[in-house]
Figure 1: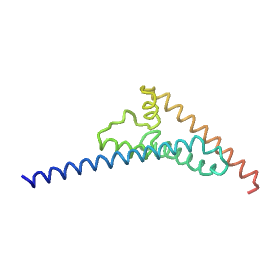
Figure 2: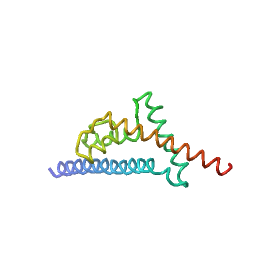
Figure 3: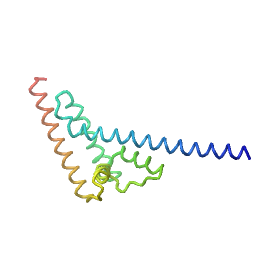
Figure 4: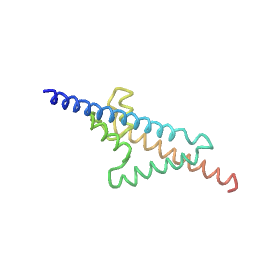
Length: 144
């Protein structure tokens, strides 16, 4: 009887530790995602971060359009990983896009995915143009 109780408590502890691990990993992925979004929105403002911003924008565009050819437009490997983590502890995301997921969470509404995805795409493309112009101006004005 005692051995049965010990095995039962070990399984309980293991399953709770596993769940806790997934919840912690999900939180870290949220922080990573939100940091990337924040940097993507504002990294172009500071001359010291413009090149890194440009690199991030290129990575995102490469993921959305390059990997998107194989996995669907707007594919993000970080979102894919985060959704897998969420499913491991029983949360089923209602959308495949992180930005829509967060806007829905913040507003408490099921926002139109087409509008959210279009706005996200237009903002990113606008940021890509801004970043490209500022980086080219920096190269030409510095004489490099």
